[in-house]
Image (cartoon, rainbow, N blue to C red; front, side, top):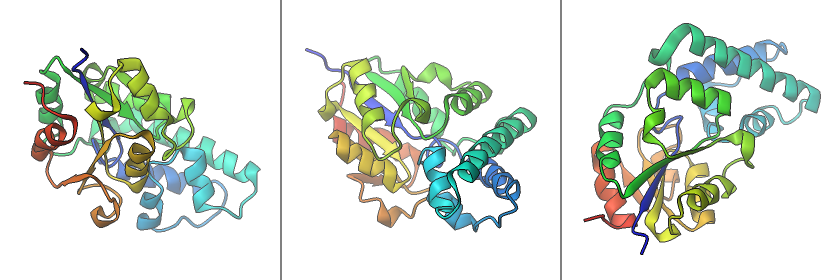
Length: 224
């Protein structure tokens, strides 16, 4: 019998506080089209969606050609900040690495990523923080419909052969929680991210990374 369990992480606002990079890159995308950028809260409200969907949500009245250029400008600006700034511009949240290592020491607990980032963006981030070794599968927006479509989670389950009842999604946005529900797995909402915790409607909520292992045990079962 397969007794593996799977913990799937969002990235921005969950594992790393990347708002500095996100806000700067979005500012560049708006400036490139001589548009006024929205305020911080509005920009962070679309974090988690794939970039084309996020841009479309911020400038729904702009032509498709403008939106496509903004996507390219954002990606280039973000990549340049990553090259210039290193990991300090998207630091890990306190306790994140300790919990990844704790969960990873259990050979029946697999870790995965489901993110609205591109493959280029995710690989650069994981490389700069030496995080790639923790995850057995990483799903990105390049290969799937945007959250909250369940495709990324369903692919994680298929690749690891883990039953939905033994899997959880950890995230900071309503898109993460809705994606988990659509895929039929448990959801854990974190209180330090980009959407108000009260809006998440998660199966479990945590305010500190140290509380995550117990929440995983509660929703996905233990491994002892």
